[in-house]
Image (cartoon, rainbow over the protein chains, first blue to last red):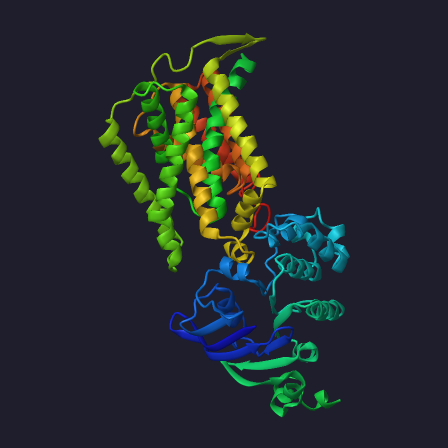
Length: 238
Length: 295
């Protein structure tokens, strides 16, 4: 579904990612893991057109989309839930969700709104409240719900578990798995490596702008280097 | 006396509000002060004047014409002076300086086309009829100004809160990046906002030109400064603040004149603004953080 080859993006003269190759097959969950500053967010922003890559190719559904404006990328069926969630703090929860369906003109928007409310009942309870008044976990649900309102074929999630309480984190990962089982392909960036590898089909490890390891998620999880660096060494064996 | 002055103050204030709304819209979406807004206002006044004087059109048609002219100038400014700067990472001050350039250009262009002298609307433009309403004597001009200013303000409020495009403007005002991610073509929305703000400026030009019955190339500067004061007074980028702030400024000015201190009218009005800003530095409706409830 998504095929990235040789993707390179810089901030000024500093190359943040250096020739990344990555494949997201239709129907799968792919996790991109790595430490702070490895280039995960840069990769995501380059995919949706918020950053312009210097080199490389991004093929989405058979179409080259590198350098395309973000609103056109959304139109093709790729939505990003950004790091930090970017809730519209001064707009109502309901309006936040409506804005997710901004480009849609079909008649099923209402039905999709009901689906989001069914998935996240707390959002229905608070639909008249301003987005900024929600807690971190609720904001993450709102951000995911909002992205789903665009009916993306590929959903990009950038650190959905960041700053959330462990119970909420488990919730979010469960929801991600459900969304995937309902037919949406997912590319997930995470620092919570253990959980990210648990739900993913494939995984890529990013270090200082380069993919250093990739493969099936359970194989990556068993890799000694990954266990050492991301899963807390020997403890991970249990 | 009191009620009469209140109506006069509201009339003057509603034009300030309209001008301040133009600043507010652009401030909200682009986070810059459009220093050319006063000159777009002045151009609107001249376009209205010329439509009435030479093409003999109805005054309301002239207002619509001034609005279109203002919107066109705004569109041009966005394309020529603002958008190219957004594409590259330049200092936040660059677009401000750029709009100052536009304002100097427009003022000189007006001097060249219309001449430096003050001009008045022909006497037949709007009848000088007056009405007695209880203790208040109100002229047709005042009714038109009040009706159009308040009408536009409420339409704008409603449009921003209820329509799809209005919501897209509010989304863009909260964060251009988020708006992009949601699939909003932000360049289009910004263009629309600048055009809308400038259109409001253009029509305000005609209203003010009618009320003081004088249109001149330098009228943009003093009006621009008052609009700017209202922008800060009401709370940067807050629409309710701009509306209310304009009314307060207008009423303060009129009452100062009415109660005998006419040469201190600006001093008293701005004194009140300074006092209120001492108590609420973020403006009457401003929030101390950028987050939350711009419009």
